[in-house]
Length: 237
Image (cartoon, rainbow, N blue to C red; front, side):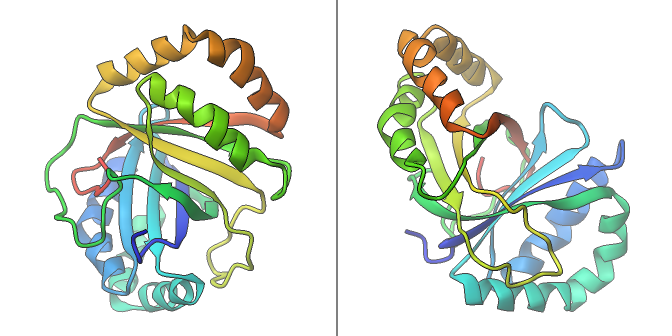
């Protein structure tokens, strides 16, 4: 496993209308290297294709102590201090954040030292966040044994699977959601490939008759479906 990513933040920001491109320009220009210089890995940043005012991003850390050190270094450092006002002015809510650990990172998940792109991608990063009842609910095994095989068979092999890391928030200046989840992400070459996956999933008898009903029973509330477009400098694309 990539040494940078034993701990992961999944963050979803609700923005003021029309402000997402402003945040992305600031983020891609200043906050990618600004954060990575403190020891983080900015694995992916995205436009939510189903919500024009949502920005989603993923960052990884070597471990929990490294998370605290890196966040302190960045948020009390010169890059954030210089550009915080512009970034914060775009946001309504930045507290929708989950502390996760990887269950699986596939070959498509970017390594810390991989070249970072500079051009907009037409790919789609899609997945879901499943809201669980508890840590010991057997959901991870259910996902691995029943959900993931159907996703893979319908063209959505997960490139990353995460579950909640139940631990004290060691940087309380940035709140975290207090819930247990499993989240997965898959890569699609374009919108057509994603649409084909959705058609195949809808037509899968195994999914519709066996897996989906059990998925509904095993989760505390409906899943959050994500359909994302990588920004020009997103590592995951």
